[in-house]
Image (cartoon, rainbow, N blue to C red; front, top):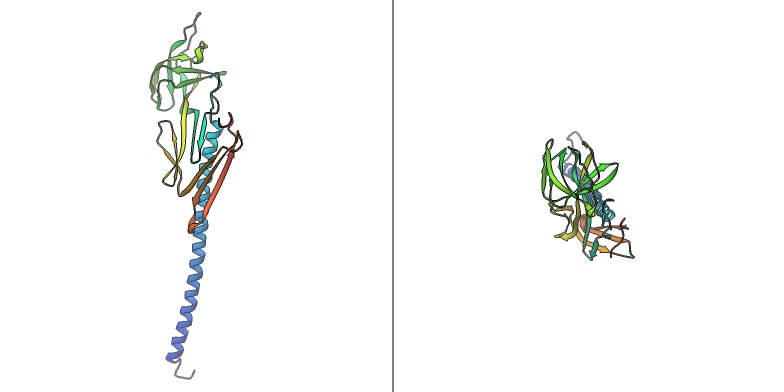
Length: 251
């Protein structure tokens, strides 16, 4: 280089070198960003599968569950197929209640009584639902008709004892839980999504991007459930849950 400075050729070569270095850096950053994105997507995919299997596990543990006040448990209440899982369980409804008047029992006592109940939230009950009275020991009282309870207000309905038993005497203010017996829960793969239906509730999508949902009864009473999803860049992610239903295995 003389007093005239850099030549045009030197400037062009320098610019080309800078562009090559910049292109390499951009390619490297793009690869790092793509790898990080795929890793995050893979972690999120596994988290969704794990969350779905936790729900399946909870339902399997409660398959065939019946409250202590119900006699003659109905068995596991579980049926399965290659891509479907259906089970029956008693389901505790949201909300807590209390008796607003004593529930007397005469001698001899009738098998049905009129009760006044309050709730801490709006609860829509139907005929056949059970009031679980928490008075020392659980006792179930079956509603003979529908009953809608508003938060902070009392409702009145007619109940009968389960299994033909005579209701015990309960005082005012005793806690009450609400139960829907023999609720049907079904899991199915629909359009790449695992859908859970519980009774008349709105169906819930537990996981998406699924390519397989397999239910293997295995060796009774164990049940194995496998979810396989299509991950980023075409990779597959599979998780398997093996559980023994608390109340027995598949029939």
